[in-house]
Image (cartoon, rainbow, N blue to C red; front, top):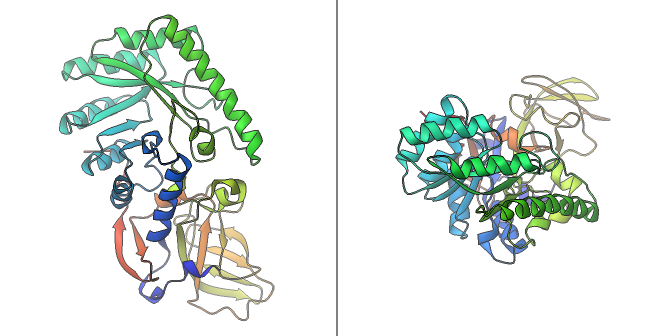
Length: 369
């Protein structure tokens, strides 16, 4: 295991626990700024990965002042920590419309933006916004191939954008484009896929321009496609996972240059056979996503993960006679984002390898009061 992950006072940390290495997070933030050639105005990082005030502070200190998020609680956390430009990349429906507008009233100095992809959502938001005497910036959520949310480039999409422009209490302010369907490991293929997305965005821009509609902002992508959009004029890039990175991204996208900065600390709780031991790291502490290997063990060679349950994870080893009860095991998760949401706080490791403080996962809950 790389010595950068060794914890000098690991005996003071219970398990299973979420561990964050402060200096590595700083390096990842610096790497993101390097990828946009120092132009922090192109960065709108997604808070859904870390959900943490201290990391917002680190990004703000680095000059990153615009953020993206998925939940109202994340938006509240960002506003409470001095962020004045917040995009909630989630369509507000039902009671969340009222909660969102109350949030806007609590933080009148913040430019909260939300996305929409359906006429009913526009109508409901307009009605409520007028009632609250507010003016809200909306971005049209454009579907360029993921087929999860959004509306494809079409005359219908133009009509929806035009409806926003004509609706009381609303102001169209651009296009939001998430391309989570692009996961080519080869950089050239990934860039070609991004170019196809950009072509759709340009077509939509042309259609809106013909109508004389305003289109000042384009927000695109996640971490895998970040290198492409980081160098695309007129586009704000919105990577999220980069702050922590994980085993899945290290394996699939070595070109990114980020470092895993968050691990799970586990311990051996049982040694049922001479070739098998069990950790206290079940899928209530590390995400049961994706299918397959959910994490890799860093400090035990030839360890092969096997059956996982709520509070247990069986590990196979050619010879487990050297394994000891209570032995610390460092695990790099395959997908860090949903793993974070399983923990109430991080144990933070300083540059000298010592744990001295914890950080709350402030926005672990989804809703504001």
